[in-house]
Amino acid sequence: MEEEGFYRYSAKFISRKNGTNLVDKIAYNNRSNLTDRNTGKKFYHRSRGKTLHSELMFPDNTSPGFRERINTPEALASEIEKCERRRDAQLMQEAILAVPCELALPQQIEVIRSTVNKVWVSKGRIAQIDIHPPPPAGDPRQVHAHILLSLRNIGDDSFGLKNREWTYQKGRSLIREWREEWANAVNAAYERYGHQIRVDHRSLKARGIERVPQRPKGQARANIERRNKKREQALHQEIDDSRDIENPGISHEIDDLFFMD
Image (tube, rainbow, N blue to C red; front, side, top):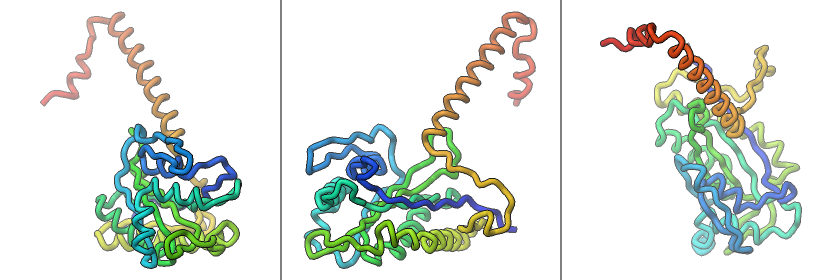
């Protein structure tokens, strides 16, 4: 019997309208310290930890010279920031994928890389991939990947015009198709590596399941829960210590029974 796996796919546009600097965003995803080469402003995110894997993927039509110029996250983000003139410019599109935690890291990288290539890079988009581990003391299913995608066509030695098929108005209509592609890729990987697990990209309502959808926990919520858990543990420890002082004769004899060889 097949188990139901953990599925998540969300997408959004990274825009200056929300006050976002793309170098800051890529530094956060990449867990690194980067500098906006246009302004000299520095962004520090290395202290947030490490990624499980990071890489840039380029379409085949990228010229060697242009690829060499933007072959790092800092260089790519700075180049896009330089291209965009509008205050409310859309800078990149981001997809966030739940990565199947039952797979080994090389298998996870394989399924992400093949999907990103099929769905986006082969269509002419540059992709920055960053895989994040679960937060400390978090749910192991929270392995996830941030995929940042370019919105402009690639010219001979620079970015060209915005591709309107990828921007907000038309890009939204493709998200349902991309959700299904990711579910199919995950299920194919589960089958290939012998896991009796499957995911479904459809909503609970579309599948006829009467259950309240779970909200993604996120880093902030996980941090709050972890702090609350530590406070609760400290409170219980204080109560236990006070009981030992009041009743020194019973000590920890019962606890010792659980650790006998």
